[in-house]
Length: 275
Image (cartoon, rainbow, N blue to C red; front, side, top):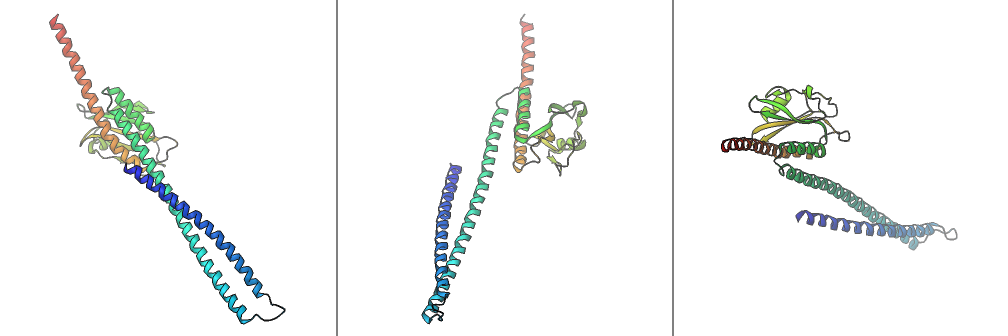
């Protein structure tokens, strides 16, 4: 409701600024016409009447007209300055509106993505949804989802897009850029994305998947889509939110899968005993 009120208020102010602009333009045209008329009268007064010198009354009138012209010129400049200020403010409002609209769209997309992540307990579906989010919202073209194997302590490939699987073996926690991100739980980004060249041991970005402080995996990004040159400010917020939601969805789906397997095993034993 507050966002709607703010947009309505912005629209109202923009309309008021437009009216001021129109009135200012009309008044400026009027001033220009009056200015032209006064200049014409001054020229007439400057012309000698029958080669005679102007009378004191004519000189006084000429001085008055000159002062009036100067005053009109000053008023015209003030109006032009006000119109310029209004135009700049309108331009600023337009830019702010674009930013707010972009952020609103991103939040809506994030809400939909979060809903999708928590709408299923199927592990493969969760991985597929994470891949779609990384492609569609972040704009990644080549990336991988690595999950921690608690028994071996290694980050193993669970999902990917455009990856040469043989070039990305299991990674020990603490080993290299990816291993350190998995161990510390801190995001990693290269300093110069535009100069970056694909290197499986040195990804463009590492986003640990965390439940509180416990890391269960890492999303690594190696290349962005062609139309995306760099990460936007909102992307970094998206990384943080995505890491938490994706980690929770993966953890829940894993528990569900394990419980389903155990239940199936127990049911098998029961069937054997009852027979």
